[in-house]
Image (cartoon, rainbow, N blue to C red; front, top):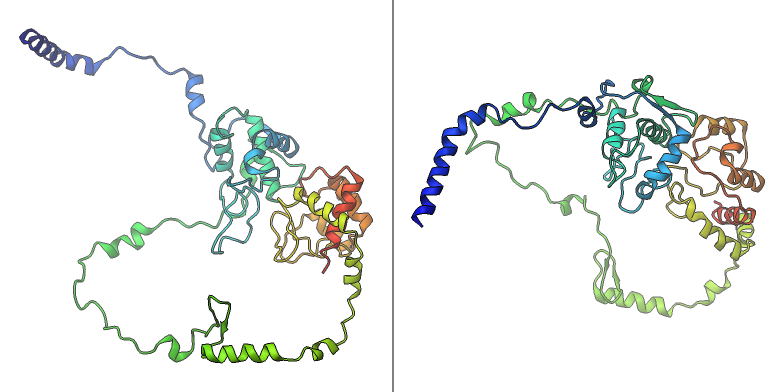
Length: 369
């Protein structure tokens, strides 16, 4: 045991004596090679600093997106499962649940390029070339309606792209505006006027009285007792039904007759086919515009008429011309959207099967206003 202790003490002493020499020069490692520094120095700043040479267009970006990004973010940047939505969300930042996307929230395009090239695709970061990164960034811009379908992004025109929310941020001035308020001597007593309750919500009727639903299904109106509700139910049950039966049935509207005449099997097939459209479009009760406009009442309506939706210039031109979505027009558009309305932003290849297009049109017709 004593020999062991002596060995440890000798080793510690030798290390202590030699420490200053090793602190000055270890003699380890080598200078990093230029290509090694370049591999790590990938940051891109808002003013374009750090941008590599390269370019990519929307069409190549769509292909690269499908191969590398769509599995998580959807074919049209609408998000898949719990993965983030990349496109849409315009005008939602003041909502209780804002949709923060590249188009609605991000202030700098450099952040998009830097993040895609540095961190994506998930689990295989930095496999994308510079040209692929430019192309994917161009496709993201196109999906958010910021650029047209024929746009080419490069290091030369990168800083010319203006993001919609570039002016939506303010400089953090809390050190000047708020910090001084919290470094003064704290007030510990009699710091403000006394507070007293002057009125209650029930006194000034700002809390509306709502009916109450009991566990047995009974509905109590404001101020009504359980006995009064029971008497009301009894009177309702005893009311004669002949008067209601005597009312003549209302004639269905012309549009209702047309919808009712649709083949239910066709409508059902169209509903199934519409699944490929739901990533961008909503239809039915409570439908709202998202990446694409809501489609209630689209059949028979003039193109580009959904309130609040920002259409592409190509669609706006068709709206000015008064183009109507007839069955024939919808069929041609669904077959090849880009050819039928050249320059529109709908990133969808089309439905090649004629029967599937007919079923889709039947489903859209079933949601006529």
